Image 1 (cartoon, rainbow, N blue to C red):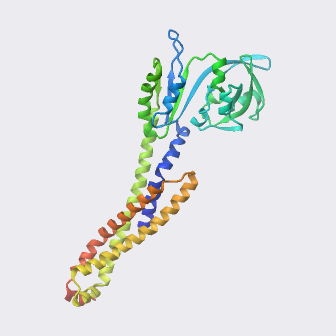
Image 2 (image 1 turned 30 degrees about the horizontal axis):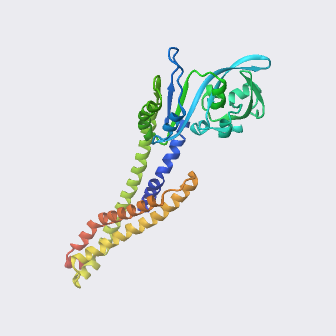
Image 3 (image 1 turned 180 degrees about the vertical axis):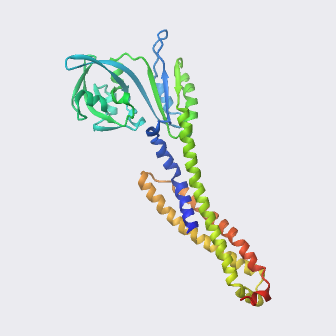
Length: 364
């Protein structure tokens, strides 16, 4: 059972490891967004306004390890509410921003790529802003006048995890380009995994410089948070593999104990076989084969159990693991079982093979 459980755990964790890691990295925004790199073209009065160009954006998206890239601009706009002029933060985003931050709509819908492309005057509100203005999150179809333009509210965004953003309004980047003066351009890049963050962060300045001026470019990464998350993940992974290794070792010790007990209880049988002409190698082969069969049968049960776990995990996380990887793990597990069976059964088999005929036949 120990070997079966160890093999099943090994197959499931190796086969599904990459998909689980992708999902974990996809959800890292919930624990600090350590896979997100913020790139800023700072505004300085003495320099002309610099913005990320379309070809720069396209080149950044092609960098290996980049999952999604989104251009974001921040403004503070005037709006009229109940006859009075107020100000509120307005964030201009492209169609990739929602995916970058794992955002969903708590009511209504987030504006679509088509609405961004068509430069429509649509708006999504943060939860706190919606509550502050309307007293409810059910604001779809309402309008706001910003900088003397009327914007239609399509929904309320959920999952921002930042009070400042929850008090902001979001409009299409294309619409903002036509109607707002921007002070600072941001390019957010989300990496596929935390291992991709260092090479992507190093590649971005080079890519930007190839397509436009990189003057005033700042590349910001939460290095401390990233290292902390990687450290936590390392220890979790370490203890998981340690548990599997311990389980397999316990299984090997179980086989060793079984074979030692078999040698003791079958001492007279061994003596009789030797008296009838069995060679030492025959006895050695017999007991070694028994140990190997124990280990292989346990491994086959573990493989079957591992396949069930892989299918259940695949359904749970919504991904289909590589069949080639599963077969590789299966082959490795069977080889490991053979090594474990031979290793655990070798000493008892040698003990059985070295028994003297006379003492073995007289054993009670």
